[in-house]
Every structure is written in C-alpha cells, then in structure tokens.
Image 1 (cartoon, rainbow, N blue to C red):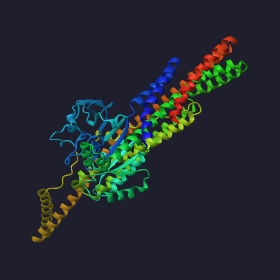
Image 2 (image 1 turned 45 degrees about the horizontal axis):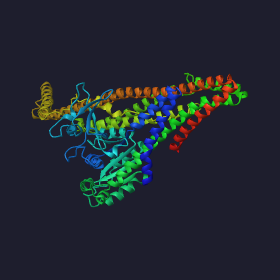
Image 3 (image 1 turned 90 degrees about the horizontal axis):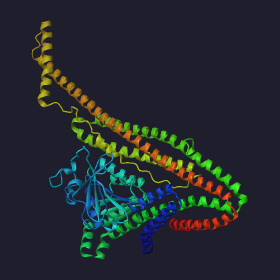
Image 4 (image 1 turned 180 degrees about the horizontal axis):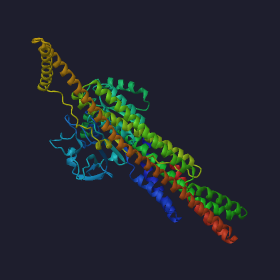
Length: 613
C-alpha cells in the first residue's frame, strides 16, 4: 500500500463518522427515530470495529514471541518449557489492563493483575508451580481466555490479536478450537519455524484455514537461528502454490527486539517485521476499516433515499397537480406491497421458515454421520489394539477427532446459513437493498469441556498371580477329572493325567485372557459411544439454538426493514395527499422548502457515495 493510500485509510474513519453523525441529525430533524436507531448501531460498529487477527500454529513454534515482537512489548509469556493453554486477546487500551474470561452463558469477565497473566494463559500447572490456569470459578466455569488491553498504536484501528493455544499440537482439540476462531477472523498468521519445511499436519491445517478465511499469511520464525531459513522459505512457497493468496514471510523475533531497543531501522527491516507490520496495518486493518466505512456510508445513503421518498412524492404533486391522483395511486400500491412484506405470508418469511427447518435437518444429519464415522473408527482402533495398552492414546485421539468433526459440522452450518440468508435477501430485494451483515457462529469446541471420555471402565489386565491361579484352577480340574475317569475305568493314568491337566490349564488361561480382552474392548467401545452420545446431545442442542438465533436475527432484520419501508411509504402517501389539497400560494412556498430539504439530502447522499466509490 502506498503512502497516499495509507493516509487515505487513516482519514476515512473520522470522515465516515462525521457523515454518520450528519445522518443521525437528519433522522432526528425529520422525526425518523427508527432510522436513527439503525445509524446508532452503525456508529457503535465504527467506534469498536474489532478486527480479529488469529495467530495459530503448532506448539513451540514461536507464536507468543511473534505477538510480542509485533507489538514491540512483552505481553504473552514465552518459555521453552511451557505452552499457551488458553487464548489471549490483545486489543487497544489507554493503559495496561487484563481480564480473565470464564466460560458461561454469557461468559463472565473477572479483572486480574497484569503481572498474573502468565498464571492463566500457560499450560496448567507449569507456570512457576502455579495451577491457576486450571482453576474453576465459583460457579464451576473454567477459564476460556485472557483479554489484555495494550496501549500500542498498531492496535488503535480496532485490531484484536488472538494468540491461540498450542498445547497438544495441530492434531489436538486445541487445533480445532483455533480453526473455530479462524472461521470468524479477518486474517490469520500461521506460525512455523525455520527448522524444517511445512509438515503434512501444518499443510492440512493451512488448507482448512484458507477455506475459512481469505487472508492468510505463513510466518516462518527463528530465521536468525537456522542458517538455511531461505531454503526452507522457498520450499514452503512451492508447497503453498496450490493456495493462491497465501503470503510467506520469514521473521526473527530476536532481531526485532534488538532493533526496537537500538531504534535501528535497518535491523528492523532485516528482521522481516517491517513487512509483517505493514501487512497487518495496511492490508488487514486498512482493508477492514475501508470495508466498514463503505458499509456505514451505504447505510447513510440508503437512509437518505428513504427520507427523500416523502419529499419527492410531495414535490411531484405540488409541481404538477394533474399528476396528483396518479402519484397517490402509485404510492398506495407500493404501500400495499410493503405491508405484505410484514406478514408471515411474505415470500422472504416463508423462505426463512422453510429454510431453517431444512437446515435443522441437514445439520443434524451431518452431525450424526460424522459422529457415526468417529464411532466406527473408534471400534476399529479398539479391535486392533488392547485397550489396556493404548486407552490413554485412544482418549486423546477421540477428543481430537470429535473436535475436528464438530468444527466441520459448524462450518457446514455457517455455509448453509449464509446460503439461506442470501436467498432470503434476494426475495426481499424488491423492497429493500440493504446489505445483510455477516452472521456469527459460536465456537463449538467449548462444548467439549462439558463432556468427558468415560474412564470408569475396567481395563486392567490379569496379573501374573491371577494368571497362575487361573492356569492352576484349569489344571487341577483336568487332573481331577481324568484321575476320576481312570479310576472308574480301572486304569491308573498317573503322570498322564497330570500332563492332560496342565494342557487344559493352559487352554483355560488362554480362554480367560481372550474373554477379558473382549470384555475390555466392549467396555472401551461403550465408553466411546457414551462420549459421542453426550457430545451429540450437547452439540445438537447448541446447533438448534444457533439456528433459532439465526432465524430470529434474519426475521428481526427484515421485519425492521419492512417497518422502515412501510413508515416511509406511509409518510410519502400522507404528504402527497396533503399536497393535493394545498392552494397555489402554499404550493409555491412549500416547493422552495422541499427543494432546500432535497438539496441537503442529496448533498449528504453524495458525501456517502464518495466514500463507497
């Protein structure tokens, strides 16, 4: 981005805020409280745009160091022996302030000391002997993240940098949570170090991240530590050629720290952070600001159009009384159509209701299919190994796999919800040209914290003493049986009976081992099913709640727009009817007033359109 473009981005926010304020004054002056409420929501969005940049990647790749270097100050804890366990949200504030975000509905925020951030964000039990990170709140709600306000210029535009957990690697439930955060992000910084080229797990994570977010940067860290970092960078660039738009940037946090300390611009450029900071400030923050500004200006222009409708109809009747009846008839017809939009029989309303019902069924079927695949894969895994040997690994695999499937299910829900909202918009378009705001879907992986893999199963193998007793029992029964049979037949079997008894004892032991293995496998499979059933129960409820929330948002959005249109049409019709009854003198005087009002509205609309381009 050029310097002139950066300067334009820096001034567009205040300019649009001024335009929105003029729109609010116009709404107040013309008695349109409903339109003023709409612009107040726009103003709140401009004041706090919350442009999210998610920093993701495998653990011990330098994510926290990257965030600290990007901000030019140490906020996120960095240590070779610890890993970030809960996300850290860094946003602008006039002074340092930290809050602990706890799970709940709604989530609760507890103020904490900035010096205690480390205790909550690192892997539980690893922060200087503290286990604060694992402590539940008074209501049993566990830490969900830490929000830190940082007085840094790079965050002033509304940037929120999210340092995601790295515990467990890219195949863990934390990776699924990171993907869920990415689905709502404006940009992603994927972090990998220069020790090796992208692994298959990293490549797959990047592929999914690119599907969920358009702006992705692959950041190669520790370029100062690995001399062959240029070779690694070139290899990664070739790997990512199939994903157009993903930039690859190599950086060194150590060089960045020295550059800041010495105020050395050349060293800062060498560290690679100059390009990264420019990307974050210009393309991400600047692009988001321009987009929000354009949307806000479009809202002002649309409101000017609605207010002008009333004056234009009145002016038409006053300027040409012979057209009065035609204008009134046309407005009456339009009002009838707009009123139809408010009814449950409106096409957009029927599309919404039918679409939500279909979406409920599709999402539920998708979830059931995914959980069924997990259960089948779990059964195959249990049948392949002895649960007593691998149950801990099976637990980790199960949680990770289920988390991955939940994110995929919620991505499916969001994609289908976007399709539905677009269809509803198309049906409403004849009466409203409003741009539909992006829906929010919550992070589904938080629901995993409410379900646990059942550990109350007996996976203990037979001890040596128990095996000996089982073999001895089988041998004793064999010896006794064959000795009795020999006595009854008048034969003295002697040692032969002992040998036969020993063979039977070994067979009895083998049979008992097999029985216990089958029992352990059955218990393990049942534990997997119970866990999956619990997750399905909770996620299914959350999905239905999400769809109901989407339905309410869509319904309220378009119902409000229909009410605005209805009021505009009603006022235009009333003004036209009054104009038809005015005298010639009154008409001439009123025409001057109307021309002045329309000129002011056209001027405001022109200012808004100048922003939208």
